[in-house]
Amino acid sequence: MNEVGFSFRPSFGGGIQVDQVPEGFFDRIERRLASGWLVPGTRHRANYRVIGKSREAIEFEAVDFGTAYAIGLNHVVVRQVGRNVISYEVTFERWNRYALIHGALLGMLLALVYAAPQVRQRVVSYPHGPWLFWGTLAFWALAWPWLLTAIHRPFAARALDRILRQELSDGPIDHAAP
Image 1: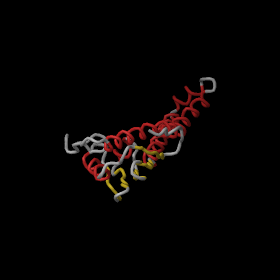
Image 2: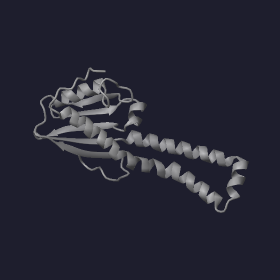
Image 3: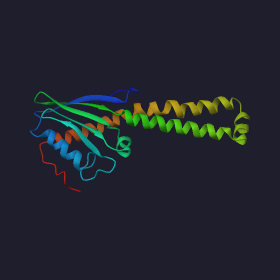
Image 4: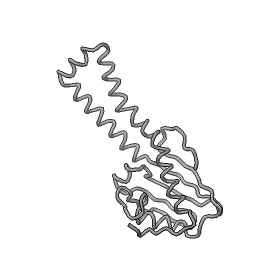
């Protein structure tokens, strides 16, 4: 597996080398997407659609909010490079955007709480209280979504790597099983 590394970018890429990419690999991926990407047999929070497919590549994207926010494989391109390498490129900009919106909503909620006179009086009664309050708000509203993006990258990469390796395995996989 490729090491994704720490980055705030909502994208990553990598590749998998095998002895030989099995015939019909992209058909297997397409069936897996239709039956359930994360867990074969269920499309709950794993609802994807194929937007392009050829003998050498498949491109797919998350259809709904639950899928886009669940694992963050929002837009994926998988390609065969030579006879024994599969490369992939993933963006999870929708996931990142939802995290930013979540942070902004949290920041607005904290600002509204601060608007209450009792809360404001309590905050200013502590040494450096306003600095701590607004610093905390800035962290959760502005920094935390980007930290989540950096933390999320390796988990999304591992999930994709695991699924691709399952589909690259020699044994048949029953995609119709519940």
